[in-house]
Length: 138
Image (cartoon, rainbow, N blue to C red; front, side, top):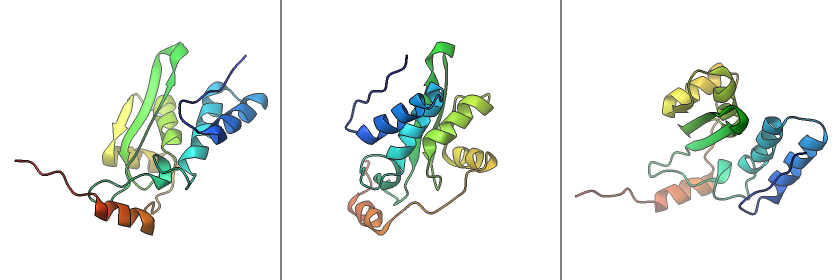
């Protein structure tokens, strides 16, 4: 028996994951599908496509996925121009001897695995990015 739960108000992720499990998908596929829903939802302002750009106006996405029963995980961080970071993290888990790939390496890995590069920044995000001031150091 499997169950789905979240710590934030992402009911749509739970619904998608639950449906996937009921259709017979394994728990990693169900998890990935649920998180994809949140990553691609423009109404979610904290993660995914509608996340906040960095101080240089670039949207960098992060994700990690874990198979607890196997003590394995895969993750990507600071990845640009790829819209489903959890799916790339799964590829790291399943197709790489690395556990975490970051920055340009994560983007390159995604492209090598068949993900398409695309612009991720919207006009609203450009406005957000302009409001973010770089941290000044002494």
